[in-house]
Image (spheres, rainbow, N blue to C red):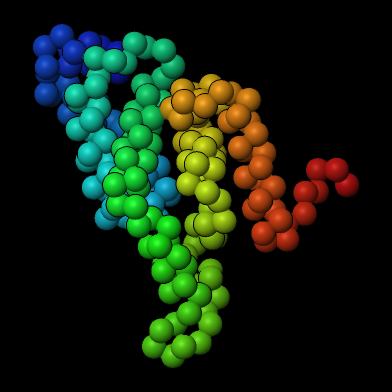
Amino acid sequence: MDDSYLIARVVAHQDAAAFGELVRRHQSQVRNFLRKLTRDADAADDLAQDAFIHAWDKLHTFIGHGSFIGWLLKVAYTTFLQSKRKANRYQEVRQEVLAEALTDTSTGSVVSHSDEIGDLDKFLAVLTAEERAVMIMSYACGLSHREIGDATNLPVGTVKSIIFRGKEKIRDSFGIEDHKYG
């Protein structure tokens, strides 16, 4: 059974088993997307659960334009943004985490950032939440620019610009040279 059949079952009959299969098929990608956005596995798992609840409630709005995973990531991203707005402490918590990653509180000594978080997380940390989401959707989830635009409600040109600027920001922040021109 493909996703479209399962979606039709859920919309027409409120088929919980069909929705459960959709969740089973896509939960890893949604959780991984949210884990990269939040950099907190527990928070990401909670957000993924909320996102699937929202998806159940809103599945009738999926009209088959673009891929289902693109739509689902849009729901997850919206859930993330709503959570961020409600908490209103996102920046403060992020700064605390970065400060803890840079300083070992037991000794007061500075620790290499890569000792605390992986290289990818280190690179993503220099980006805004929007830039991180777009970069993750593009490179980790393999979505097209159009699918990312649909998921984030951004024009395709803006998505391309965000990807370009995100890569430049990472290169500049870590002294990575672009070797394609020389």
